Amino acid sequence: MVVTTRQLVHAALWLVVCFGALAGCYLVLTAEFVAWVQVLIYVGAVVVLLLFGIMLTRAPIGRSDDLDSGNRVVAGVVAVATAGVLVGVVVGGFQHAYAELQPGAGSAETLGASIFRNWVLPFEALSVLLLAALIGAIVLSRTDIKGRG
Image 1: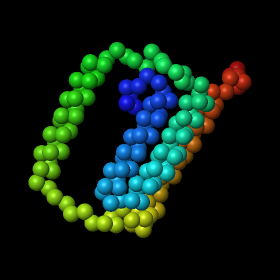
Image 2: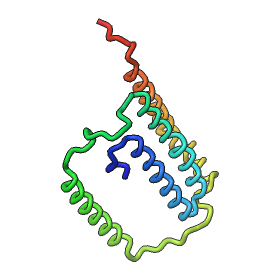
Image 3: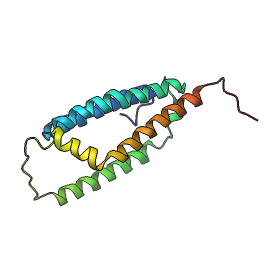
Image 4: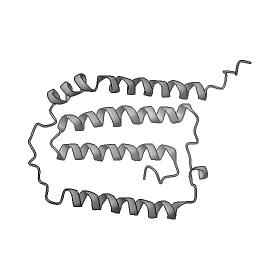
């Protein structure tokens, strides 16, 4: 629904549903901390940032025919073929695999140690990238700034 709806705000709201379902998958895998981070960061922050970006750039909020390329049949065939290949590869690769789930694998201590030891630089680079995207959206949406000749 995120990619098939013709209303941009509805796509952002369907993204909230998608992120919530992913948080539910993390809960099933006994990674409670990761599930709550998913809800807080992605649902709470990234989607709000996306909605602010839509509002600040004055993108069309209602139904837009410009978002439809007319290739629905081709896109559907490619999507079904890709899903079939992915399901076949996953089923073939993990047909006889079995992993015992250990409670506490998604604990805050293990994840915090991994994030702040190994993933600090990519985490900070992503935050700078999101900040630059928000500033760029604000600059593009302002009409009182004239080009300097």
